[in-house]
Structures are given as structure tokens and as C-alpha cells.
Image (tube, rainbow, N blue to C red; front, side, top):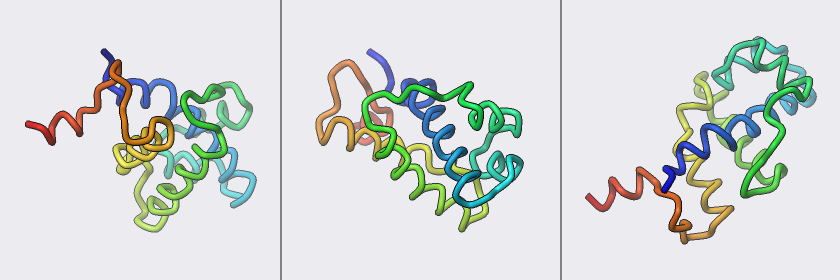
Length: 118
């Protein structure tokens, strides 16, 4: 069994960051350093995202839905002057809800859900 956090951090979140980085640069005319601050990564990572060298694949949900989820939490991070990592569990919860509905597949574990049962 895998902990869903592991899948989220290794596969889904990099794609989400890449999509959000491109969106922030294009739509909000932010520079790479500003984007890096809000996404909690380095400026060179943003350059890779911008040039489609990282964060290409999205699992479980559509790219559009991921961007929609990410934007909600990004706006919160910008308003609170923090980075998006402060909301990683909430983002994960939204992705899981969108991907699987209320029933998590048996081959994934959620540490938050396990902790609630203890």
C-alpha cells in the first residue's frame, strides 16, 4: 500500500506547481522570483516549469481541474503572504475528492484519515 501523500508529492504536486507557475507568469505577469516564493520552490525550478521541462504529467484528475483547485489555495497563500505548502493537506483532500469521490482506493492510505480513527 502507498500513502497518498507520497503520490501527491512525487507526481501530482509537481504538475500542479508547473501549471500554476505558467498561469501566474502568463496571467498575472509575475516574475519567476515572485512565483517561486508563493509556490515554495527555487527560481530555477520555475524556469524549468515555464519551459515545460518538468511537471508534465497529471494523474487521477484533469489538468484544468487541478489548476482550479490550485488557484483556490494559491489565492489564499498570496493573501496570507505564505506559500502554497501550508495548504498541502487541503489540496490533497480536494484532489482525492475529485479523483475518487468519497471512497479512497484500497491500495492508498491517507495519514489524516488513519489519524482520525486512532
